[in-house]
Amino acid sequence: MDQYQKIRLEKLEVWNDKQVKYPGKFEKTHQTIDARELENDIQSVKIAGRLMAMRVMGKFSFAQIQDESGKMQIAFKQDEIGADDYKLYTKKLDIGDHVGVEGYIFTTQKGEKTLKVQKAMLLSKGIRPLPEKFHGLQDEEMKARYRFLDLIMSQETKKVFDTRNKLIKFIRNHLDNSGFTEVDTPILQAISSGASARPFKTHHNALDIPLFLRIAPETYLKRLIAGGYEKIYELGKCFRNEGIDASHLQEFMMLEWYCAYWDYKDNMKFIETMVQEMVKTVNDGSLKIEYQGQKLDFSGSWKVQSYRDLVFEHTKIDLDKIETFEQLKAEIESKNLEMSLDKYIGLGGLIDGLYKKFCRPKLIQPMFLTHHHKDLVPLARRNDDDPNVLDMFQVVVNGWEVVKAYSELVDPIEQKERLMEQAELAKKGDDEAVRMEDDFIMAMEYGMPPISGLGLGVERMIALLTDCPNIRDVIYFPSVKPPKGDELDNE
Image 1: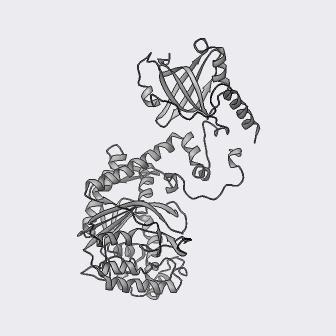
Image 2: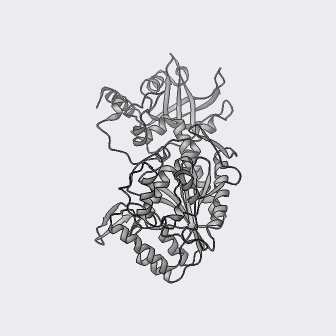
Image 3: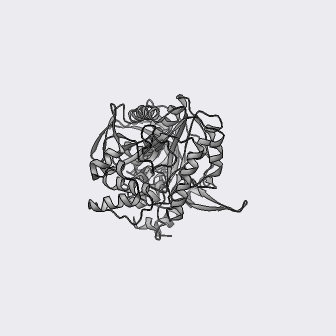
């Protein structure tokens, strides 16, 4: 414990002689945002929050209280509250303390609405001092680890998370009003399936079975469609034990929905309208935003390009003429495309790696990428006219995949065959291969209607709309390395 903490604890002891230590409640009459709108001389106004500033000036001092809604100035006048209370309030309170105050409203000579304190109560003592007032936490790793301090010190951070909450509320309202039903599916799953990703593994002690944290809710949501639901969605956490970069974290929020009797084209129309409404909702009605210096325009009908054409445009490799992993590898080498080939096992993985390295970073404006190669997604339906491609699309913005959607494969025989192919890749060492789920296949064997499903990366969308360079900036408590000693003492 340092000297500053000892001094604060000594001040707490002074307060303990005056009132109940750490009171159980405080009856607020107003939030600060509302109190600032009150007329002068309104009496018995009670606000509470964290003390963020204090200016002691003789017998008349000012301070600032911050609550969830914002900040408000308060004032202490010795002639009104007495010398003892004035000394207690101005000398034994510290920046960071939670206080409750009662008084009346007046306007200062500078025109600022202020609460003149008649009574004050220490609600909790900030034993540790807050970071330096004007700079707050500067290290990005510390901001993520100590999000509570970041929120205290930075109104910009608070605005980011206000936008996050506003966007999540919009998603639910939009889907509910469109006839969808919100459901929930297991996070702990016996088989990790529904996407190409490496899972986290755990153990269920009571049942003595291995379990996985879900990488996607897809196969369980499809079971519900088999059970009779027609329009459902889930908004929840997924977990993928993979690398970290600006658009990837191991724990993230995914929106997935499924609609019986839709195909991927219906989903394209629906998501374009939904995203445009989403952008307008958090962007004051405008469909144009600026992200990290890049102007993005979500208006109008978005560009549509096929996966094959995009890959050919940037690599001169024609996927229509590729049938095997070895053939594609030879093409990549012959065209001197610098790419690490050893980490890929199946044709789908190599195609995906080629696209992500040479194509996706160049896609800046919102666009639809359609008709992906058949080996990319084993759960998607093949196109009737060209079985080498899938009835599928992605929405890509700023080089980020924001949405993935497709017409679902509902043929249980074909689905089983394709999952068996994935099992062979897993045997060869592909730890991102989609796993076989016998219960899922059984649900399909009872019959599924035509379905189209969609997944949207919620944090990626929030980051774009809040101009945050990394999705961890829009997650309250992202995964970070443990601290080395008491970092905050060095801030």
